[in-house]
Amino acid sequence: MATIEPSTKRAVVLPTAPPYTVDDLLKFPDDGNRYELLNGSLLVSPAPTPLHQRIISRVMRALMQAEPPHLETLTTVNLRLTDKDYYIPDIVVVPREVTDAVGLMFGPDDLLLAVEVGSPSTKMRDEGLKTSAYAQARIPVYWRVEPDEGPALYVYELDGDAYGPPAIYKAGSVAELSRPFPLAVDPAAFAA
Image (cartoon, rainbow, N blue to C red; front, side):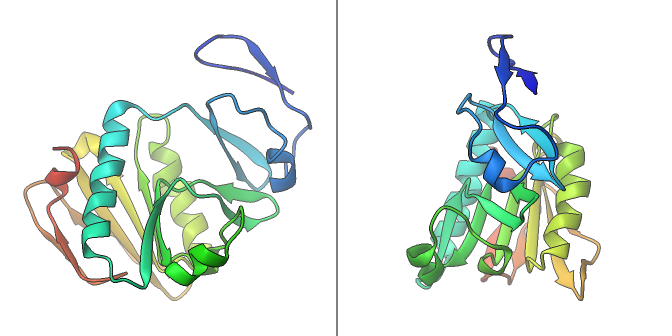
């Protein structure tokens, strides 16, 4: 199967055909795109914009300043949910002992928090598909940061087998959070 690289408009020939597995994905070329899988279907995202990267850095800084010593905040890790479901969350929080033991892939049981920063190309995916996938994988807390909303922070917490309605924190209001650890933050700081 061929895809077109956005920056060069040249065809990239992928080494296998759909439906894809995580093992197939590991054979893909390193072409600057972010490849993820949803039930074997390929999800492709371009490299993040400077604003997207800034927000990731600010969210990471807020988390790292508040994290207790037994937890660790990481960015762009490999998350294997099943053989045909694979994501690269923008940020995760995991127990430090897990980071010392994990190889190439984290499993859903390793994560205490997954964070996605929205962009025009991923908004629907982050709001719908990933919310559902992360809940089914039983990731306790999922944050979605929406830059075009000020930014706004959407906090989903696992309630049984699904996330309850998100708590929404707009820029200018302080989010007083308790999971995965206590943290008070104004989402406006994520874009500053």
